[in-house]
Amino acid sequence: MPALVLLGAQWGDEGKGKATDLLGGSVDYVVRYQGGNNAGHTVVVGDQKYALHLLPSGILSPECTPVIGNGVVIDPAVLLSELSGLNDRGVDTSKLLISGNAHLITSYHTTMDKVTERFLGSRKIGTTGRGIGPTYADKINRVGIRVQDLYDESILIQKVDAALDFKNQILAKLYNRRAIEAGKIVEELLVYADKLRPYVSDTTLVLNDAIDAGKVVLFEGGQGTLLDVDHGTYPFVTSSNPTAGGACTGAGVGPTKISRVIGILKAYTTRVGAGPFPTELLDEDGEALRRIGGERGVTTGRDRRCGWFDAVISRYATRVNGLTDFFLTKLDVLTGWERIPVCVAYEIDGKRVEELPYSQSDFHHAKPIYEYLPGWTEDISKAKTFDDLPKNAQDYVKALEEMSGAPISAIGVGPGRTETIQINSFL
Ligand code: GDP
Ligand code: IMO
Ligand code: MG
Image 1 (cartoon, rainbow, N blue to C red):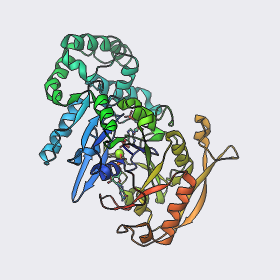
Image 2: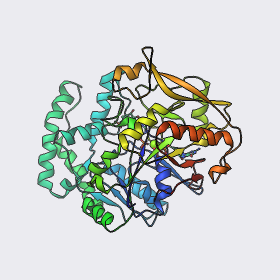
Image 3: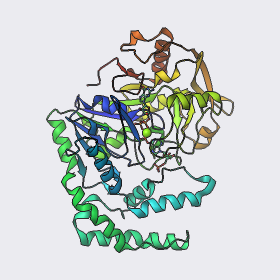
Image 4: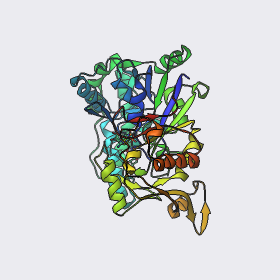
């Protein structure tokens, strides 16, 4: 079972960082395949808490090689500061590998992200403002700057010139901003060239060789299924493919090499930013989930929107990712409710709908149809096996498994590395 994908089954922040870190000790490579520093993973190791944005969570496991694949967009300033922050805390980051084909987020991308959101006003996406969308737009538009361009100055100058040519017209004429000087950007970027050079490598070759040699490779998604630009709640999505297929394109590994796809699934639902959210709670239950679950963004510090578990979404995640397993996180947060509503289907224009509607308008009108499961009051954070859980918590997990269409192979009962019940091994 050498190659696994681990991804978010909802709208991100499901606890992917903790799940990857947990596996880190038995994994040879942990690979990020999409997204950038819009991601925010909190990993708790003993009494130490780490907030990671761009680096794969495997960086915290000394035996593991962390890899940033070609599908990732890299803000070099953020990357270097994240590395030095970890070095200061005694974490060895020297094994990191970065794809030369990954695209760079420059200061004009973050500027474009912010001015575009401002321009959209009430129609804004609520992006993280980290330049993610504009960088992927340039990649698709074939005017992006890649890591390898840092090592050919004349090419770099040509590319930055080409990228700014059109943008400067927009900045000046549409947004009433000053034009950005290409020379300044080139200067900014060249500062990073030598610092990044030791990490840059042909990551697709390294990873395919590793898989062929029987090494364990874990692909770690950022964001989540419903933030996927193709399969999510477009246009309220990120600009990459967090779904399982993204691991293949974003790391240069064929689908025949992937043996297992694990969806990280929160025992309730959260979302950051704008867009539809059928089970969202705007009452004291939502407030309680936010408080008990600590639902505040790692990247932007925004409060997360909270709601009950939505089985229509988990079924959809199973379908579009071909999930083989779920890792159910934050079950402990639900302790104390007398009964727990679970959305089993939607009502859309008076009709019961079991599957996620492909039409954006339908999804905006979807009203949750709830089933009510009995809650529990016992502290479950010390549970080590499924049998240690109170009967009602066991039944809650079994009901979610039944509705979601793939086995729940692990359960999170607290933020720490050890606060996990492993039911089936992932390896
Ligand atoms: P990610 O973006 O998917 O990596 O998730 P985040 O790190 O943004 O958010 C998940 C939060 O939940 C983090 O603060 C984790 O420490 C925490 N967490 C993860 N698993 C559990 C769990 O099983 N129980 C509790 N209480 N917290 C958890
Ligand atoms: P992790 O990896 C939750 C959301 C933003 C916004 C939309 C587009 O921690 O799960 P972007 O800056 O990507 O163009 O913003 O996507 N978003 C996330 N929400 N968790 C994340 O990452 C997110 N990354 C982006 O809030 O709605
Ligand atoms: Mg997060």
